[in-house]
Image (tube, rainbow over the protein chains, first blue to last red):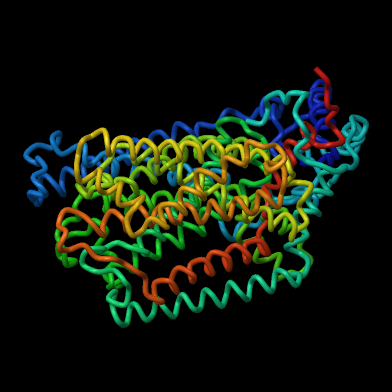
Length: 177
Length: 460
């Protein structure tokens, strides 16, 4: 199993600058932890584009279908009532009155489905202990995760990361899911 | 999302010499330090008001809604006025965080967190009124589409009041999720700074184990963007549906097609006024003048001019159409609004909503904090009167002159309203002591583009 070490950078620009140079020298950059989103970092460390918006669309579609089925079942099929003379013989006649609820349920399912998916996929739940290699990771430090296959070369790689602008390199072992 | 280019002619949004660490320090200070005198005074006042409101609410439940001033002609009064007022205030938060995110307005980042919190608290206050105006709040679950054996038929999906149930609950829950997801990284910041192990444990639980990896941030940004895209039509739909409560009825003065856009503009108008009222105090008390700058206040004032003018045009259009339609009842309703027994409410509304915001055309007034604060209070009052005028003046004289009555509130109704204001401030003050009031992570990402010491303002 590869040994993971953590390069600590003080500035996101230094980190962005160092990653391509380190990769050229054969260093395996696996991940980055930062206090705020760094734009363009995804392509440097090979994070694929998320499909969460597609998931959201599908949840929304589920909400729309559910709302249409529900209003049809309750108002047209199960217990039709003449309310203020509004036509309820056929679903399409009464449909305009059902649009607001359909819209709200679409948004409800799309938003909550996506939020839950995000939390589960990123393993963010109450009670999860965050793996924090450096205490100022959510303040002003930027951490580069590097995998070293050959344990004997850990010190060489650490020196290399330092020479590319890291202020420190941490050699502790952390459990990352 | 914030990767777009920042024009050199723009003024910096973050003043002072800030580093990332300094920003963390500044924004975590209100959470980590002790509350000052002003905080305690406002908290106690708000708390007493809240308790008073709860007492009045308890009395209402015990006695029934006959303890309110509503009568058989004016069936909706303060209760629905307050509901619509609070819901309107609850529109600014989502507008700031969703619509301004889609328009890539960076200045929203200093105010979106507290505006979203304000939204949630305002919707809580708003929600109390429909829940309690049923008179039997323990049967409120009848509003949900439950099967017949629960005691009622299916709910009526033709009714705008039911659309409201769906709209408000969707709006509340989606805003809550939007706000809370945005809070996660900042709660993690607080967690990692905690010295006390108990506090660290609690912030650890509520920050869901946020670790800030590149994957997390990538998904986080996508989720924020899509939630913004979903919330934008949602926020417009909510007040549209609230306006349907009136517009789909056949009461003169209510049955108009202008209501949805007019209500939405009014909601944004009053919401921004409330954001200004709160922010002007909060920036001072929490020492955040370098993050919520005069420029932020000026930009919000410009939105107030825009929405205030839309509301003004809507008032005029309503009046014109009431005459132009040739409908006698409609015409009378409007003539009665302006010159009938409730003329003072109508003209208070006109003064506060149409005239005072126009003062913001003057740069001197727009950039004066004191003037902004006073005008924002005026707008809050004016928007309350708008709902009062719409509801009470239309109801108190309609088709049957023998039923014409006057309406005045009882002290119970007034107490409940004061109580919701208390509740709102109790929640907001607690929030300002427990959560970062500024979206810290988001703001850090724009420091190098709009920070004072990074930005060299160019001359074109």
